[in-house]
Length: 233
Image (cartoon, rainbow, N blue to C red; front, side, top):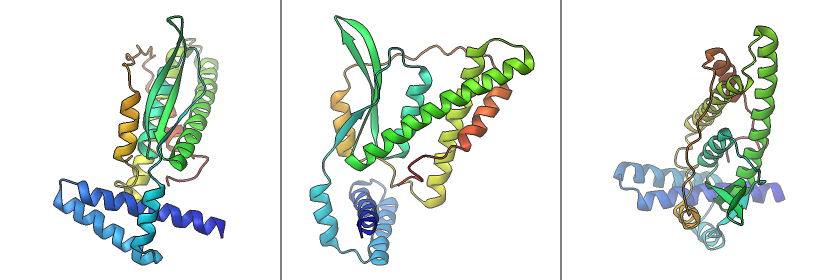
């Protein structure tokens, strides 16, 4: 029964997003498409409008969650935060921690509705661990095979590929399931995130080795990435 209620809530959340998009979409065709999709879901699952309105009253809460603060955040952590947030209905910032004017750490901070934030943070942390581990393994094997010792550059080539691969995997999944209107974070989430943005993170200079082989290997691993929480919800 608990699983059924959870699944029902996920469907209601999708209906809410579709209805919201139908109301504020400047494109008449897209607005009509969103409305029809919402109506179809309601009919298929026997959900009435009163249930959707009740969920709207209880679902306006926007929270944020920090990842672990680290002294030096690599460029690819930030890139992964962006890709994951865009595909799991959240927004994000990179939060800087300072003590006595000195930088002591940075962390990704995700904004969204409670269930979305929990999933987004879990996926991000898992992706960071996987990407870092896979890049290290590849760099060691590459050095052993070729004798080239520019581990940092090779790892960055691999990680560039990994991020492109995971981005394309999510994009394909969204297109396949028709989730383009579903995975976008809503206006309340965007506003909550914008209120917390106090500065800009300057782009890092990425030292790459220019290895197409490493980039392609990373891309393949990114395409094979399987989120621990399953598919996009």
